[in-house]
Every structure is written in structure tokens, then in C-alpha cells.
Length: 397
Image (cartoon, rainbow, N blue to C red; front, side):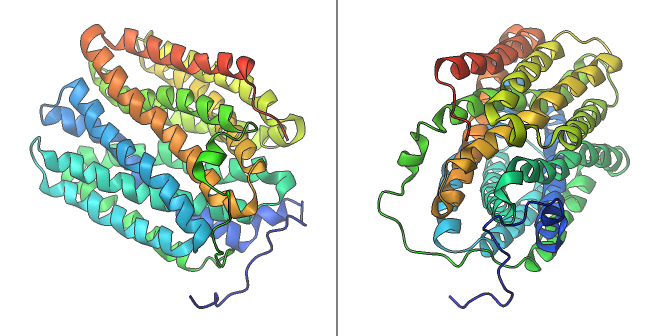
């Protein structure tokens, strides 16, 4: 493979100023991920479409779970690819795959196995794009501002969760879901164009002896973070999957209020507290964040109106806004540079494993026992991560 045409940005972390996070390459990869996620987050409304096709709660959960069942095993493999070769081609392939699979939903007008196939293709696209983008973002971040960098990168991702759903509701109200399926994928084209201008930070290298996914998973410095991520992902996935359907049940017209409140809280707390995990330790920040996230999920089963949904969104955003980058930074700290892609991939895969298992299990709980019981059980699952921290706390670096 020929060397990159542009010089690689420094990756030794020599610069510790905020300007190191706002220079061209870091911003471009962040914007590429942002535009990709607008397409991805537009499909948070897919449960409404599936409900209109006659899907039950467990069928909705299963269709959404296929996304994760594909992304989870593929994500570590993608991590190995970006470590062995390069970041940019993997992202570009994923963006084009997301464009094609998302547009194809416009041609499915009844419950069909094709829906499972399209969600699987979206899961594969997500594994490629998110792993490549997050790994490149870490490459460009100074080590002493790693959590802050991941927080800034994540802020742009979080913005899509509110903005994309709001735009999607507008499109669906005026043009139906077919309109959404034609418009949302166009963001993947924008993402690819943004990413083309990002220089490679990694030329690839031979496999290292002893460098394996299993070794990383059981690294005592980080494997509890993977477990906590699974539990937190379960509650996160339940909220994002079933809030749109809950809104119909309790007759809330605009469920985007939850996503907007969640997004606003997460962004605010990352801007105001972006360096907390860098200054005080990853675990110190992750512990109370996990508590907030669990309580937020439990509260979703108790709300009766739009105001309550907004308050739950604020609590949810505050918890997730600090938890995700703190755990992410902990994992990266413990990885060698040659294992960075695999470490990022395993972290993302563990969170997606929680999302996937949560939608499968708790979708059936909702079908059998109702939404209040489902959200309570999902929230308790998140809070179980507190016990994991106490039994085997991950090591702060």
C-alpha cells in the first residue's frame, strides 16, 4: 500500500493545549462521524414505522437487535483491520454501505425478513464507520486530554440524537417514512466527503506476538470497564428503542423532547465537565454517572406527560454524557498504540452487546408485563454496574 499523500499528524501527545483538539484533522473526522450519525440516529423512529406495519414489541426488539448482533462480532474484526492496515478505507466503505442499506427501507412496505437483513447491513456499516472514526480521533488527541477529546468527539455524536430525530419527525409528518428513507441516507455521502480530507495517522504494521482480542478483554486494568459498558448499554438501548413507542402509548405527540433534553444535558455536561475524568480519574467520574443513568431509565416507567419525559431525558443525558467517555478513556489508556483499534472496537462492541441484549430481553418484558416493569428492570440492570465497580474496580491510570 502506498504511503499517504499528506503527512501524518503527530500522535505522540506532545501538545496538551485545547488547540490540539480544534485543528483541522480532528475537526474533520469529528464532522464526518457527525454526519454519519445523523443518518444512523434518524432510524431511532424506525419502531414507529415497524409498529405501523403491525410489529409487536418483541418483534421490534428483535429487528433492532439484529443491528447489534451483526455489529458486535464485526466490530473487533474491524478493529483488527484498522490496526493492521488503515483507518480511512474502512470508514469510506461503511459510509457507502449505510447509504445503500438505509435507502433500501423505502422498498419494504410490510413485515418481512428483508427488514432483518437491512438492519444487519446497517450494523456492519456502523461497525466500520464508528470504529475507524473513533480510533482516528484518539490518534489525534493528546494523552493528557484524551477524555476531553473523546468528550468533544462524543458531543457531536450526541447532537445528532436530538437533531436527527427532530428533523426525522418533520420529514415523516410531511412526506411519510418513504421521504425519511430517501433523505436520511444522503448524510452518508456528506460523511464520506468529509473523511476523504482526513490524513492517515497509521501506516499499518505486522501483527504483534501476544497481541490478541482475548488478551485485551481480560486485561485486569480494563475488563471491568467492558462489563460495566454492557450493563449501561442495556439501559441505553432500551430507552432509545422504546421511548418512541412509549410516547404513543401515553399520548405524547413529540417524543423528540426526550432526545432533545438528553442531547442538551449530555452536551452541557461534557462542555462544563469535559476534563473531570482527566483530572480526577476515570472511575471517580464513572461511578456517579452510572448511578444517574440507572435512575433515569427507571424514571421512564413512571412518567405521565411531556414534562416528565423531558426531565428523564435530562437525567439520562447527564449520566451518559460523562460515563461513556470516562470508560472509553480508561480502555484506551491501557492499550498499546498497536492495539488501539482493537481496544476501541472491544469497548464499542461491549456497549453494543448491552444494547442488543437489552432490546431482545426487555422487549419481551414489555410485551408480557408492560413498559413500567420493563424500564424498572432495565434501570436496575444499569445500577448493577455499581456492584461490578465495587467488586473489581477498573484501574485508573
